[in-house]
Length: 370
Ligand SMILES: *Cc1c(COP(=O)(O)O)cnc(C)c1O
Image (cartoon, rainbow, N blue to C red; front, side, top):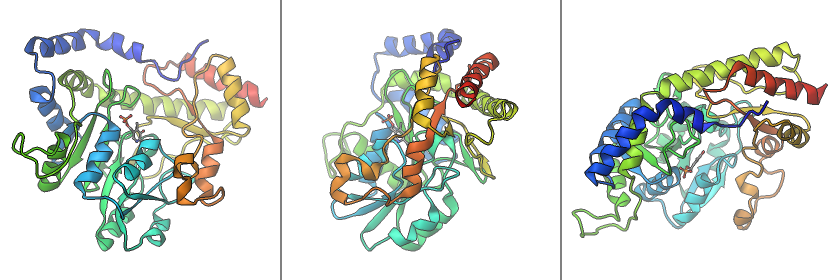
Protein backbone atom coordinates (compact mmCIF):
# COMPACT_ATOMS: atom_id res chain seq x y z
CA UNK A 1 0.00 0.00 0.00
CA UNK A 2 1.25 3.49 -0.92
CA UNK A 3 0.90 6.00 1.92
CA UNK A 4 1.97 9.53 1.03
CA UNK A 5 3.29 11.89 3.73
CA UNK A 6 0.54 14.33 2.77
CA UNK A 7 -2.36 14.08 0.30
CA UNK A 8 -3.62 17.52 -0.70
CA UNK A 9 -5.67 16.09 -3.57
CA UNK A 10 -7.91 14.26 -1.08
CA UNK A 11 -8.59 17.53 0.77
CA UNK A 12 -9.23 19.42 -2.46
CA UNK A 13 -11.66 16.78 -3.77
CA UNK A 14 -13.83 17.33 -0.68
CA UNK A 15 -13.76 21.13 -1.04
CA UNK A 16 -13.87 21.68 -4.80
CA UNK A 17 -17.50 22.81 -4.87
CA UNK A 18 -16.88 25.43 -2.18
CA UNK A 19 -13.56 26.71 -3.45
CA UNK A 20 -14.31 27.08 -7.15
CA UNK A 21 -17.01 29.78 -6.70
CA UNK A 22 -14.88 31.59 -4.10
CA UNK A 23 -12.01 31.87 -6.59
CA UNK A 24 -14.39 32.74 -9.42
CA UNK A 25 -15.80 35.61 -7.40
CA UNK A 26 -12.33 37.15 -6.96
CA UNK A 27 -11.63 36.72 -10.66
CA UNK A 28 -14.90 38.47 -11.54
CA UNK A 29 -14.06 41.34 -9.19
CA UNK A 30 -10.56 41.70 -10.72
CA UNK A 31 -9.45 42.88 -7.26
CA UNK A 32 -6.35 40.71 -6.77
CA UNK A 33 -4.16 42.23 -4.07
CA UNK A 34 -5.30 42.92 -0.48
CA UNK A 35 -8.90 44.25 -0.66
CA UNK A 36 -12.09 42.92 0.95
CA UNK A 37 -11.25 39.18 0.86
CA UNK A 38 -7.92 39.78 2.61
CA UNK A 39 -9.56 42.11 5.16
CA UNK A 40 -12.19 39.47 5.94
CA UNK A 41 -9.56 36.75 6.34
CA UNK A 42 -7.50 39.03 8.62
CA UNK A 43 -10.48 39.52 10.92
CA UNK A 44 -11.33 35.81 10.90
CA UNK A 45 -7.79 34.59 11.63
CA UNK A 46 -7.35 37.23 14.36
CA UNK A 47 -10.55 36.09 16.02
CA UNK A 48 -9.67 32.42 15.60
CA UNK A 49 -6.29 33.10 17.22
CA UNK A 50 -7.62 35.24 20.11
CA UNK A 51 -5.68 38.22 18.78
CA UNK A 52 -6.81 41.80 18.21
CA UNK A 53 -5.41 42.40 14.73
CA UNK A 54 -4.48 40.36 11.66
CA UNK A 55 -2.25 41.54 8.81
CA UNK A 56 -2.17 39.30 5.74
CA UNK A 57 1.30 38.86 4.24
CA UNK A 58 2.99 37.01 1.40
CA UNK A 59 4.38 34.04 3.37
CA UNK A 60 5.27 32.79 6.83
CA UNK A 61 8.84 33.86 6.15
CA UNK A 62 7.71 37.40 5.36
CA UNK A 63 5.51 37.38 8.47
CA UNK A 64 8.67 36.82 10.54
CA UNK A 65 10.70 39.34 8.54
CA UNK A 66 8.13 42.14 8.72
CA UNK A 67 7.56 41.42 12.44
CA UNK A 68 11.26 41.87 13.18
CA UNK A 69 11.27 45.06 11.10
CA UNK A 70 8.18 46.39 12.90
CA UNK A 71 9.80 45.63 16.27
CA UNK A 72 12.76 47.76 15.16
CA UNK A 73 15.27 44.90 15.27
CA UNK A 74 18.38 45.65 13.21
CA UNK A 75 22.18 45.67 13.02
CA UNK A 76 23.89 45.24 16.39
CA UNK A 77 20.88 43.53 17.94
CA UNK A 78 20.64 39.93 19.08
CA UNK A 79 17.56 37.73 18.79
CA UNK A 80 17.21 34.52 20.79
CA UNK A 81 15.61 31.52 19.10
CA UNK A 82 15.75 27.74 18.73
CA UNK A 83 18.14 26.07 16.27
CA UNK A 84 15.73 23.18 15.77
CA UNK A 85 13.28 24.75 13.33
CA UNK A 86 12.71 25.54 9.67
CA UNK A 87 15.45 27.78 8.27
CA UNK A 88 13.24 30.88 7.95
CA UNK A 89 13.19 31.46 11.71
CA UNK A 90 16.93 32.07 11.85
CA UNK A 91 17.32 33.40 8.32
CA UNK A 92 15.00 36.35 8.97
CA UNK A 93 17.04 37.44 11.99
CA UNK A 94 20.14 37.73 9.80
CA UNK A 95 18.20 39.38 6.98
CA UNK A 96 17.36 42.38 9.20
CA UNK A 97 21.06 42.60 10.09
CA UNK A 98 20.72 41.17 13.60
CA UNK A 99 22.54 38.17 15.11
CA UNK A 100 20.69 34.95 15.91
CA UNK A 101 21.53 33.49 19.32
CA UNK A 102 20.53 29.84 19.49
CA UNK A 103 19.27 28.24 22.69
CA UNK A 104 18.82 24.47 23.01
CA UNK A 105 15.46 22.65 23.08
CA UNK A 106 13.56 20.50 25.57
CA UNK A 107 13.83 16.87 24.48
CA UNK A 108 10.12 16.12 25.07
CA UNK A 109 8.46 19.00 23.17
CA UNK A 110 11.34 19.80 20.75
CA UNK A 111 10.68 23.48 21.64
CA UNK A 112 13.08 26.08 23.08
CA UNK A 113 14.02 25.39 26.70
CA UNK A 114 12.94 28.44 28.75
CA UNK A 115 15.38 27.54 31.55
CA UNK A 116 18.31 28.21 29.21
CA UNK A 117 17.14 31.57 27.84
CA UNK A 118 18.16 33.92 30.64
CA UNK A 119 21.85 32.95 30.39
CA UNK A 120 21.75 33.90 26.69
CA UNK A 121 20.39 37.43 27.27
CA UNK A 122 22.91 40.25 26.86
CA UNK A 123 22.50 44.04 26.68
CA UNK A 124 22.16 43.62 22.90
CA UNK A 125 19.21 41.21 23.08
CA UNK A 126 16.08 42.75 21.56
CA UNK A 127 13.67 39.88 20.91
CA UNK A 128 12.88 36.21 21.44
CA UNK A 129 11.34 34.01 18.74
CA UNK A 130 9.89 30.83 20.26
CA UNK A 131 8.76 28.31 17.61
CA UNK A 132 5.72 26.10 18.24
CA UNK A 133 7.22 23.11 16.47
CA UNK A 134 5.06 20.41 14.87
CA UNK A 135 1.87 22.09 16.20
CA UNK A 136 2.61 22.16 19.95
CA UNK A 137 3.02 25.50 21.73
CA UNK A 138 6.35 26.24 23.47
CA UNK A 139 6.38 26.88 27.23
CA UNK A 140 5.22 30.47 26.84
CA UNK A 141 4.57 31.70 30.41
CA UNK A 142 8.24 31.74 31.50
CA UNK A 143 9.25 33.15 28.10
CA UNK A 144 6.75 36.02 28.29
CA UNK A 145 7.75 36.70 31.91
CA UNK A 146 11.48 36.80 31.05
CA UNK A 147 10.81 39.04 28.07
CA UNK A 148 8.79 41.49 30.17
CA UNK A 149 11.56 41.62 32.80
CA UNK A 150 14.23 42.33 30.15
CA UNK A 151 12.04 44.52 27.91
CA UNK A 152 12.24 42.16 24.92
CA UNK A 153 9.77 41.71 22.06
CA UNK A 154 8.29 38.22 21.76
CA UNK A 155 7.54 37.08 18.20
CA UNK A 156 5.85 33.68 18.07
CA UNK A 157 6.74 31.55 15.07
CA UNK A 158 3.36 29.83 14.89
CA UNK A 159 3.80 28.74 11.27
CA UNK A 160 3.03 25.12 12.23
CA UNK A 161 0.58 25.86 15.02
CA UNK A 162 -2.57 27.74 13.99
CA UNK A 163 -5.26 26.89 16.56
CA UNK A 164 -2.83 25.19 18.97
CA UNK A 165 -3.35 26.15 22.62
CA UNK A 166 -1.34 26.68 25.81
CA UNK A 167 -3.27 27.08 29.06
CA UNK A 168 -6.39 28.01 27.09
CA UNK A 169 -4.61 30.60 24.95
CA UNK A 170 -4.12 30.27 21.23
CA UNK A 171 -0.81 30.21 19.38
CA UNK A 172 0.09 33.71 18.22
CA UNK A 173 -1.85 35.52 20.96
CA UNK A 174 0.72 35.34 23.78
CA UNK A 175 3.67 37.25 22.36
CA UNK A 176 3.66 40.79 20.97
CA UNK A 177 3.34 39.39 17.45
CA UNK A 178 2.40 35.96 16.08
CA UNK A 179 3.38 34.63 12.67
CA UNK A 180 1.42 32.11 10.60
CA UNK A 181 2.27 30.41 7.31
CA UNK A 182 -0.29 29.30 4.74
CA UNK A 183 2.23 27.21 2.80
CA UNK A 184 0.22 24.34 1.29
CA UNK A 185 1.56 21.72 3.73
CA UNK A 186 0.57 23.67 6.85
CA UNK A 187 -2.69 22.80 8.62
CA UNK A 188 -4.31 25.82 6.95
CA UNK A 189 -2.71 25.85 3.51
CA UNK A 190 -3.42 28.06 0.50
CA UNK A 191 -3.03 27.47 -3.22
CA UNK A 192 0.42 29.04 -3.12
CA UNK A 193 2.38 31.11 -0.64
CA UNK A 194 0.73 33.19 2.05
CA UNK A 195 1.01 34.19 5.69
CA UNK A 196 -0.40 36.34 8.48
CA UNK A 197 0.88 38.40 11.38
CA UNK A 198 -1.42 38.74 14.38
CA UNK A 199 -0.97 41.40 17.05
CA UNK A 200 -2.51 42.72 20.26
CA UNK A 201 -1.07 46.23 20.16
CA UNK A 202 -2.63 48.67 17.66
CA UNK A 203 0.61 50.60 17.04
CA UNK A 204 2.63 47.47 16.33
CA UNK A 205 -0.17 46.16 14.08
CA UNK A 206 -0.23 49.47 12.19
CA UNK A 207 3.54 49.34 11.72
CA UNK A 208 3.35 45.78 10.32
CA UNK A 209 0.57 46.91 7.96
CA UNK A 210 2.62 49.90 6.76
CA UNK A 211 5.81 47.89 6.24
CA UNK A 212 3.88 45.22 4.32
CA UNK A 213 3.27 47.83 1.65
CA UNK A 214 6.67 49.55 1.32
CA UNK A 215 6.16 51.53 4.51
CA UNK A 216 3.83 53.91 2.70
CA UNK A 217 1.35 56.02 4.65
CA UNK A 218 -0.46 57.65 3.03
CA UNK A 219 0.19 56.15 -0.39
CA UNK A 220 3.47 57.42 -1.94
CA UNK A 221 4.63 59.00 1.34
CA UNK A 222 7.35 57.04 3.12
CA UNK A 223 8.45 57.62 6.68
CA UNK A 224 9.68 53.99 6.77
CA UNK A 225 11.26 51.56 4.34
CA UNK A 226 9.18 48.39 4.00
CA UNK A 227 8.68 45.93 1.18
CA UNK A 228 6.06 44.17 -0.87
CA UNK A 229 4.81 41.61 1.63
CA UNK A 230 1.17 41.67 0.47
CA UNK A 231 -1.30 38.78 0.40
CA UNK A 232 -3.32 37.97 -2.74
CA UNK A 233 -7.13 38.03 -2.73
CA UNK A 234 -7.35 34.59 -4.39
CA UNK A 235 -5.31 33.08 -1.55
CA UNK A 236 -7.53 34.82 1.01
CA UNK A 237 -10.68 33.48 -0.68
CA UNK A 238 -9.32 29.91 -0.62
CA UNK A 239 -8.13 30.24 2.98
CA UNK A 240 -11.51 31.61 4.14
CA UNK A 241 -13.21 28.48 2.81
CA UNK A 242 -10.62 26.24 4.42
CA UNK A 243 -10.62 28.02 7.80
CA UNK A 244 -14.20 26.83 8.35
CA UNK A 245 -12.93 23.23 8.20
CA UNK A 246 -9.76 23.70 10.24
CA UNK A 247 -11.09 22.50 13.60
CA UNK A 248 -12.45 19.32 12.02
CA UNK A 249 -9.08 18.68 10.35
CA UNK A 250 -7.20 19.31 13.59
CA UNK A 251 -9.53 16.86 15.35
CA UNK A 252 -8.81 14.33 12.58
CA UNK A 253 -5.06 14.75 13.10
CA UNK A 254 -5.48 14.31 16.87
CA UNK A 255 -7.55 11.16 16.30
CA UNK A 256 -4.87 9.79 13.97
CA UNK A 257 -2.21 10.52 16.60
CA UNK A 258 -4.24 8.57 19.19
CA UNK A 259 -4.64 5.71 16.72
CA UNK A 260 -0.87 5.58 16.13
CA UNK A 261 -0.27 5.42 19.89
CA UNK A 262 -2.61 2.42 20.19
CA UNK A 263 -1.19 0.70 17.14
CA UNK A 264 2.46 1.19 18.17
CA UNK A 265 1.66 -0.11 21.66
CA UNK A 266 -0.22 -3.06 20.15
CA UNK A 267 2.78 -3.87 17.95
CA UNK A 268 5.10 -3.80 20.99
CA UNK A 269 6.95 -0.78 19.59
CA UNK A 270 6.09 1.80 22.25
CA UNK A 271 9.48 1.20 23.94
CA UNK A 272 11.55 0.88 20.76
CA UNK A 273 10.58 4.19 19.21
CA UNK A 274 9.96 7.48 21.00
CA UNK A 275 6.39 8.68 20.48
CA UNK A 276 5.74 12.45 20.48
CA UNK A 277 4.90 13.84 23.92
CA UNK A 278 1.65 15.72 24.37
CA UNK A 279 2.42 18.07 27.23
CA UNK A 280 -0.24 18.99 29.83
CA UNK A 281 -2.37 22.11 29.27
CA UNK A 282 -1.77 22.00 25.52
CA UNK A 283 -3.94 21.56 22.44
CA UNK A 284 -1.50 19.91 20.04
CA UNK A 285 -2.68 20.25 16.44
CA UNK A 286 -0.19 17.78 14.93
CA UNK A 287 1.08 19.57 11.88
CA UNK A 288 3.57 16.72 12.10
CA UNK A 289 3.65 13.41 14.00
CA UNK A 290 7.34 13.00 14.77
CA UNK A 291 8.90 9.92 16.34
CA UNK A 292 12.42 9.28 17.57
CA UNK A 293 13.76 6.19 15.87
CA UNK A 294 16.89 4.09 16.48
CA UNK A 295 18.84 3.64 13.19
CA UNK A 296 16.69 6.44 11.82
CA UNK A 297 18.32 6.74 8.38
CA UNK A 298 17.99 3.00 7.73
CA UNK A 299 14.34 3.13 8.81
CA UNK A 300 13.73 6.06 6.47
CA UNK A 301 15.18 4.11 3.54
CA UNK A 302 13.10 1.03 4.48
CA UNK A 303 9.85 3.03 4.66
CA UNK A 304 10.51 4.84 1.38
CA UNK A 305 11.16 1.49 -0.26
CA UNK A 306 7.82 0.22 1.12
CA UNK A 307 5.97 3.22 -0.36
CA UNK A 308 5.49 4.97 3.00
CA UNK A 309 6.03 8.74 2.88
CA UNK A 310 8.20 10.13 5.67
CA UNK A 311 10.60 13.03 6.12
CA UNK A 312 13.28 14.40 8.44
CA UNK A 313 12.35 17.74 10.02
CA UNK A 314 15.14 18.90 10.34
CA UNK A 315 18.41 17.13 9.50
CA UNK A 316 20.78 20.03 10.33
CA UNK A 317 20.10 22.36 13.27
CA UNK A 318 20.56 26.02 12.38
CA UNK A 319 23.66 26.59 14.55
CA UNK A 320 25.51 24.05 12.38
CA UNK A 321 24.36 25.43 9.00
CA UNK A 322 27.18 26.59 6.75
CA UNK A 323 25.69 30.09 6.39
CA UNK A 324 25.93 30.56 10.17
CA UNK A 325 29.51 29.25 10.49
CA UNK A 326 30.68 32.81 11.27
CA UNK A 327 28.68 32.66 14.52
CA UNK A 328 31.24 30.17 15.79
CA UNK A 329 29.06 27.30 17.03
CA UNK A 330 30.62 23.82 17.18
CA UNK A 331 29.07 20.34 17.13
CA UNK A 332 28.15 19.47 20.72
CA UNK A 333 27.22 23.05 21.68
CA UNK A 334 23.46 22.40 21.60
CA UNK A 335 23.25 18.67 22.23
CA UNK A 336 19.46 18.17 22.42
CA UNK A 337 18.93 19.90 19.07
CA UNK A 338 21.71 17.86 17.51
CA UNK A 339 20.31 14.61 18.93
CA UNK A 340 16.81 15.46 17.65
CA UNK A 341 18.24 16.15 14.19
CA UNK A 342 19.74 12.65 14.20
CA UNK A 343 16.78 10.74 15.66
CA UNK A 344 13.53 12.23 14.41
CA UNK A 345 11.26 11.09 11.60
CA UNK A 346 7.87 12.53 10.60
CA UNK A 347 5.13 10.03 9.67
CA UNK A 348 1.92 10.69 7.69
CA UNK A 349 -0.74 12.30 9.98
CA UNK A 350 -3.03 14.26 7.62
CA UNK A 351 -6.75 14.03 8.44
CA UNK A 352 -7.77 11.97 5.39
CA UNK A 353 -5.40 9.15 6.41
CA UNK A 354 -7.34 5.89 6.90
CA UNK A 355 -6.90 3.22 9.61
CA UNK A 356 -5.64 0.83 6.93
CA UNK A 357 -2.98 3.31 5.89
CA UNK A 358 -1.89 3.83 9.49
CA UNK A 359 -1.80 0.05 9.91
CA UNK A 360 0.49 -0.14 6.87
CA UNK A 361 2.83 2.48 8.36
CA UNK A 362 3.02 0.67 11.71
CA UNK A 363 3.46 -2.74 10.04
CA UNK A 364 6.35 -1.45 7.93
CA UNK A 365 8.05 -0.04 11.04
CA UNK A 366 7.42 -3.27 12.97
CA UNK A 367 8.95 -5.24 10.11
CA UNK A 368 12.07 -3.07 10.23
CA UNK A 369 12.65 -3.59 13.96
CA UNK A 370 11.65 -7.30 13.96
C1 LIG B 1 6.78 26.89 7.16
C2 LIG B 1 7.54 27.57 8.22
C3 LIG B 1 8.01 28.89 8.08
C4 LIG B 1 7.97 29.64 6.78
O1 LIG B 1 6.73 29.74 6.18
P1 LIG B 1 6.63 29.98 4.59
O2 LIG B 1 5.20 30.30 4.40
O3 LIG B 1 7.04 28.70 3.94
O4 LIG B 1 7.51 31.10 4.24
C5 LIG B 1 8.63 29.48 9.16
N1 LIG B 1 8.81 28.83 10.31
C6 LIG B 1 8.39 27.56 10.49
C7 LIG B 1 8.61 26.90 11.81
C8 LIG B 1 7.76 26.88 9.44
O5 LIG B 1 7.37 25.62 9.62
